[in-house]
Length: 406
View: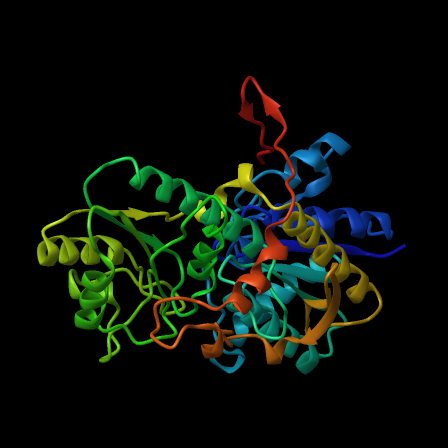
């Protein structure tokens, strides 16, 4: 019989993050963990001694099925940056005191880059002090920017939503017999994986987007306006997909050209918004055409009705793999996905040292971006497509999806 384990969720949620939580919970219970605790609002909540026994809230197979299909973070989240050990050793002593009181054998943290920083620091402190508690990272992020993994759970469902929504926006624009331009603003601070998913809209039944602008390429406003003029002919409509984090040559985000961005989180990230509106206003003023901006915003990460079955399955698998690794003695590791085959698509799990992943951003390779910087290659489309396959329908009650809430 194992001792107790604890799990938390951190950073921005996804449509499948709770499937990873179920993977941790179910695998830990199946392997003999006595109690599986859930941190309320991540490591910050743990410091405030906010935690629950998940068995009090996940009581049946139906609850498990509902939780897999429930978007956002069931346990709540946080954006709390642990200080360096030498800067505040008392905080680490407090965390480990709480873990020891709860008789914790293994600690699991579901999150992205910043969350893996937490796993790195906690596992380093455990080694420094001789603690036997195991610390494992469970990957999650719609941004798909974690190093050492083929992709991240959460990305496939967000990409599926973006591609489907893009097709619908393109169809809508073709209704009118006069030219109009729609600019879609898609999440992505420094990596353009999400915006690149708009390219999947192109097919036998869809013309596809006209331009794709990613943060990996320096944005030139004059060049952008000239490109729009070049493409805009006759009465055709245009749809342009842009990342919220595109930057001009001096390093400013395009959204900062319009308004000063005030909010900065604990990790130093500015809140980005308004890129699409700024560009729509510029294009409208320059060309004298009807323009609109559409900011997909949080819809990209909470649209559980558009979940990819591949994504939700892999999210469950990485949670289970983290428990298996911890119970076999691993610590200071992150579960990663390894693409073994393209056709048929086969992906397995492995573990990588958290020091190779924390605070490192994986960006779209430049060779997967067109030479002019306004489109992506077929190689990138081929990379994304397997991740959006199949569906897992919500449990519908009275015409709407049913969710599980704490």
